[in-house]
Amino acid sequence: MQSRPAIPALVVTFASDLISFLKSAFRSRITLVAENLFLRKQLAFYREHKIKPQPLTDAARLSLVFWSRLFDWKSALMIVKPETLTGWHRKGFKLFWRWKSRRGRPPVPQTVRELIVRMARENPTWGQARVADELSLKLGIFVSPRTVRKYWPWQPNNDTRNRVSTQHWATFVRNHADAIVACDFLMAVTARFQFLYVLVILELGSRRILHCNVTTHPTAEWTLQQFREAIPDENSYGFVIHDRDAIFSAELDEELVRGIGVRVLRTPPQSPQANAFCERLVGTMRRECLDFLIPINERHLRRMLREWVGHYNSGRPHSSLGPGIPDRGQSCVESRKGYGRAVKNLKVIASPILGGLHHEYSWEQAAA
Figure (cartoon, rainbow, N blue to C red):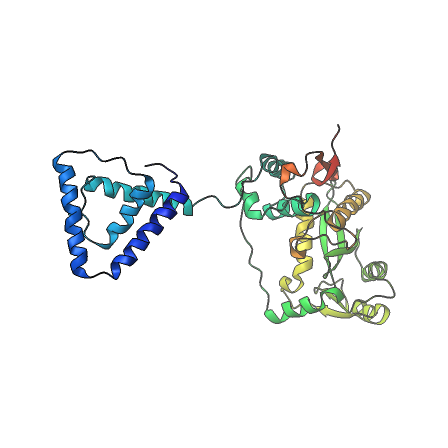
């Protein structure tokens, strides 16, 4: 039995058999019995004289398999053995499932696979979603995180963290994200074991870092000055979220309300999830910057954070934005369907960030 029977022959054979079957349905029972005996006599004559039948076509074999399901065929089968007919049925079933299980999407080209491996190795802190976002936003190559996982060069740690949040708070943040500013402090240690305090101010709607600065002695006066530098006089912000750290005193909150015109939302005690966006930003800053670099002094830390914040705002894809990039002026490249065929005259270049800790990818015209 051939692996791929001709489709036109199958259609013609089944159509002819179906017409004959429908015609027989309107004939009398006596006529059908007489015709059956008449045909059996002719077949018996061929068997007595040992006349070898011609090989059946694939269409004829599939037709016999189909019609054998409607009656007890074993007594009527003469030209082949019963084992042969059941073998045809098994082969037909395999062909059916081979067709039904045929490959769907085209495979990812080798060039894209190598690019996924390259990004993963050059950026050890990145996850699969980050690589997928980088490919789609910067290079126009749309692959899912699941596809990136398939070609990941090592087994990543896929531990998930549960986010604890109430529906009412989530709804409030979603409806007022563009008017909310969140802030938080984190601590860094220099090479001489000096403690430095970093203040980050985040715009929730765009995930853009409005301000970031370093000090050795955080005070309410210094913090208020940072808000004045981060938030202009004419602004559309209505709320500021911060925790209950002693730095955020009642006097500071009053100055924020009176001088900047925002309403202060203090998080409940021991509830970091109430300021989840800024807490996540602090974690990202540690995982992508501070955990891998040791600042020499305050000036060095400020320079490091300035470079990282620039990358975060204008070059780092954010999954929560669709994915997207916080700076609204940054546009994404068009999709390059077909991968290798569409980028024949282009090559991918990598721009190092923080000495190669991270990279930003873009297209460049290849040399002739």
